[in-house]
Length: 138
Image (cartoon, rainbow, N blue to C red; front, side, top):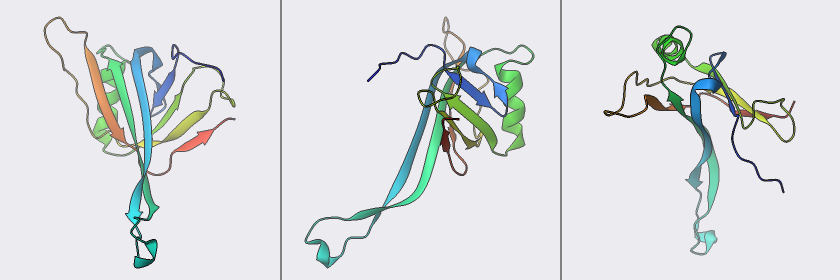
């Protein structure tokens, strides 16, 4: 099995490619576990999957210039509506070794300024997915 180092990942929010300002991408998905244990379970807990949910975590290098991070994300935050997203491990062509994950996220938070004296101006955010997250290789 090949090993991979993330060096040129791809992230798009609301149709805006923010890869050149993003230094961390984390897409997490989970399914609720619902307890269906009965006396027939012989003392063992039994579970089935319930609702699925996801989170898209990103770290941006902040930039206030026109068409950059803050100028892009602030208006998306103000819409209060889910925005499309796409992430890939590599910014190359989508394929079996470089699947794309797509869906919608709610921009429920935005931190225009965060940091201490001497820190790099970064923004760490976590957006909940809204609806299904898809994986595609074409």
